[in-house]
Image (cartoon, rainbow, N blue to C red; front, side, top):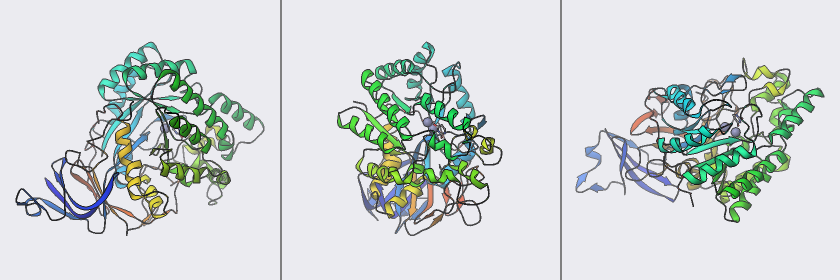
Length: 479
Ligand code: DUC
Ligand code: ZN
Ligand code: ZN
């Protein structure tokens, strides 16, 4: 199958130009001046399908490098399976995800890795890779790290919070970092001081402060800044590259920026929820449906921050100036009925997570419309940098000959209403939307995944099993 996408504005991280994109089979064959011939051949006359993208942007498919499909967590399991979550991702212009294999304390890393392959294989609508979570860092986990790098899993997530579930102590963190420094992999860090948070949570519950607002109030920015600083120091000690996930506090951003200014190989990721939502959402005052408990919809960790403190504004600015390099979703959806409502009497029992794999491209495009980031920066933070950061560059994240035919035709004159219900966009397996009522001045028209049209103007044409495992290389940002 040969496809020509003609007359669109092709947007790469490095610039934009009117051009035609020729996809041959699964791969981009050429990016051409509009209407060009190829060695005397009339390109348009020799393809199977022509997509006219006049007036539209043609961008590399989005890469969401932080998702948790069907993750066992918080006494339940994230409500999107690999099937439903990757299909929703495709609807929103994301053509690759990198999900997390979970290893809880005592479990064997490689056994878990094989289990995750069984869960995902044959289920995904788009391509998928894995990061590996390490909790206790056993000797066998260290050798597994080397084996996994050879398998194409070149990044390892550690947690400084969730004691008894995920938390690694500083010695365990250093051991994993030393191994990453020697095998060229990336350490990803959930940077929050878990001991402090556990104490504040116990005190809040004992005082009868049990509503969702207290989730945010018991995870203060100081706990995030302190852990971010500690992670940076431990990475500095060991020489490991460090990627801090889901940064929400402006003080944590500043720690990352300062480390980068000192020349350390440290990166920061934020998520749409930290750009658009705030602690006030945890008050649950948007509708009457759940009373104050509606705030549970926005319980995630790191938590949403108070709008008066200026975190959201700082985050947009840091994204524009490259103090923060990427936006992923931390897609970890739970339904209100039967999942979030486990915490009706006690906020600490609310499963932590927000789902937005479907909306990241749109929400960040709105940042372009609002003048917060440029068009090229949108592509860079949502697609190109994820590919470069996590060893996929050349095949993903760029429109160039030889890259995978992962392409989105995005209509800047279209419109997207986010939310559950008629006329709105919602394909994730959640009974609510964290972005209900958000209106986007743009629309994902057509999505092509390795040469196959999977979304076309409101129709899903893909199938489960279309997506393949991405065997990743090392980060392009290694120094
Ligand atoms: N944070 C969440 O909100 N959910 C999943 C795990 C995490 O770190
Ligand atoms: Zn995390
Ligand atoms: Zn996560």
